[in-house]
Structures are given as structure tokens and as C-alpha cells.
Length: 206
Image (cartoon, rainbow, N blue to C red; front, side, top):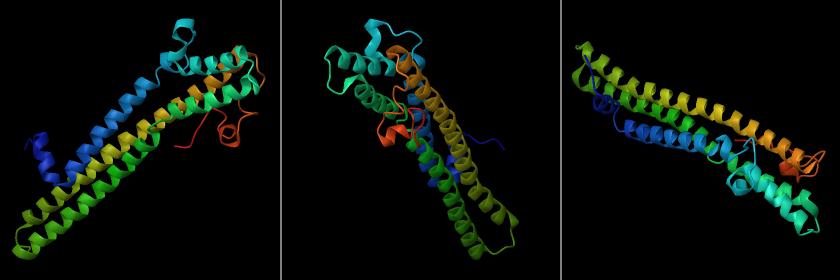
């Protein structure tokens, strides 16, 4: 028996509406992150003067250059550290939300199953166990939400792992490129504040 998407949503009950909202948010966050983490917006191969402020690398370079030009008391290192910390934070934006959506979808799927089983046993209590279709139909409907929740959760957590690795790689490359441009031996990590030094401009906890 073929069923439409609307039929599957109806089978899963009200929890399917929440799972649908989770799936929309997951897709939105993944697309936004893929766009934000594209190379031209993070660490482009070449930093043209007229496009400096359009990438993470350009903004860090501009911060260091401004400190050099104005002979800032703390020198370019401090400016680079501050700008680098800000850019790494931007690279990892929405990553905790994506992980939370993955876990939430899984929990909602299990909740839908429990609610569905309760409803199934309620029908059994009213009609008895003479008709096996009552039991089978109730369990089938309950498991629909489990499948949907697990599917959304797996997709969200897989996307989170992929994007997390990309953030780490771009952060490390950002550190290396800044060091090359300013000819610094340890441009960020060794002189960074504790919270940035521990990340090494390469990783942040999701």
C-alpha cells in the first residue's frame, strides 16, 4: 500500500510535526554553514586588497596591519589574537544548535513511540486482543516516529561531524596563513589568552 508524505505524517501523530520542524531547521543550519564556510569567505587562496574585509583571513590581516600602521602600544600580535578569536567564533557559529537538533530529533522519535504504544494499548484494552490488526496497527504507527527521529538525528549529527572538521581545518589554515603574512613564528597560539591558546585557532568545543 503506497502512502504519501501526508499519510506518514498523520501516522506518526502530533510528534511528527515537531520532527518536521527539526528537519527544516537542520537543513537551514547546514545550508547556512556550507555557505558561510566556503573558501572565498574564510581563507581564500589569494587576499586581494579590494576584498580584504570579505573573508576571515582578510579581517585578521587588516587588524594586524592597522596595529602596525598606527603603532599600537600592544603591537600587531594582540590585534591578531583578538581578531582571530572573533573569526574562529564566527566559523563555529550554530554548530552547537546543529548537534542539539540531532539529539532532540532522536529523543522526539522515542517520545512519539512511547505515546503511540500507550495509545495502542489503550485501544487493546477497549477492544480486546481478538483482532491482531489492532495490535499491529498501533505498533506500526508508534514505530513511524522512531524511524523519523533516528533518520533526522543521524543526518544532523553526521552533518555536524563533517562541518566540525571543516571548521577545525579552516581555523588551522587561518593561523598558518596569518603567520606567513606577518612572518610570525607563533602568531597566535603561544601568545593568545588561555581560552584561545587552548584552541590554537584550530578547534572549539561544539
